[in-house]
Image (cartoon, rainbow, N blue to C red; front, side, top):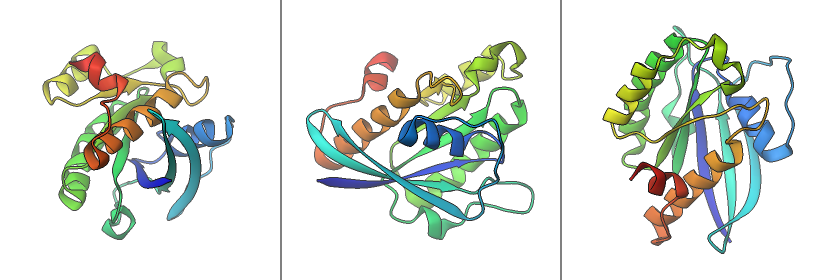
Length: 179
């Protein structure tokens, strides 16, 4: 069986923990619990006929004082960069964070997810901001940890990209959609 480490990165309160909980345990809680340090979960799945165990490292959110520690990133085969659609500042922070994570990890697959798609009427992230992500050639999804919308696709697509890069596996569905 193949085992891969995936890091969840983003600022405080964007929904990293909720995305993991929805994917691993199919649950959502409205109660906010700050992640301190790192919380590790795992889930086994089949990607294009291969059994894969994803080790999901939910890293504490960034703020003006706390930054993602390179020691937590070490060994990651990929990462999920998370922003909150209802807070545009988290998008800008995520773009900055991506540059630092890429510098620490090198060229590993990542997917950018803008969480809280269930609150689309409250979004501060604009269509122009989303277009700027496309101009960077970033794959992104609009998802909701609360409803589960596109959560499974997010993890399956990243796992597919990781397998493609590390084992010559097939491209993800998101790659095909963005081609």
